Image (cartoon, helix red, strand yellow):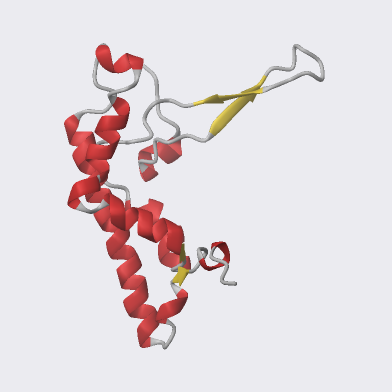
Length: 145
């Protein structure tokens, strides 16, 4: 039977970042990105270690923060947006690309990300730097003459 890589057993991170190169074509090689199709993981198990960079740095772009908030609103809920998007895929006619429990997990996981940013803001504001959590990357796009 096939075995999982040892880190997958302990970290439950099934999103493998892997690629291959074809060198048969001399210097005209190309990358082939392989995805094992488990990037959404198990719908019933959330992996909190994936949030470590966010928890450690406590920094997020304003554009990202606004998009995440939008996707958590009832009219643009992430699971609904994803379901609608996936419905246009030709494979959708054969079988759903994500199960309903996986779509529900997206909303739950998004809520966890938003809560993590809020905790960062509360922690930073106690130290007098709450405004440093959200980096305003939109200010440079707005020119006032």
